[in-house]
Length: 82
Image 1 (cartoon, helix red, strand yellow):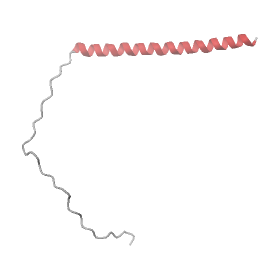
Image 2 (tube, rainbow, N blue to C red):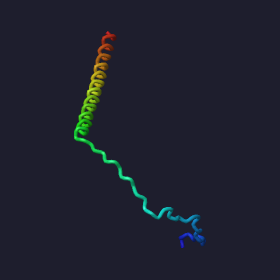
Image 3 (cartoon, helix red, strand yellow):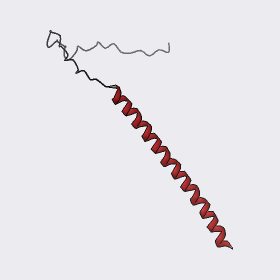
């Protein structure tokens, strides 16, 4: 009763058909072997640790300079009010 009634329309024929171009299976070329040594992995890990430590040192320095600037500004403001 509440279902819509669709008109009867036949499905159109496909515009084109797919035909296999080459029946022979294509062979994939193998990727070259890449060998990673233990020293290279250790170098990357040590480099990452050093860069992380440097970034942390810069962040701590920036925070300490900001705190010192706020304290000095507060001290100078109190000095000028007197």
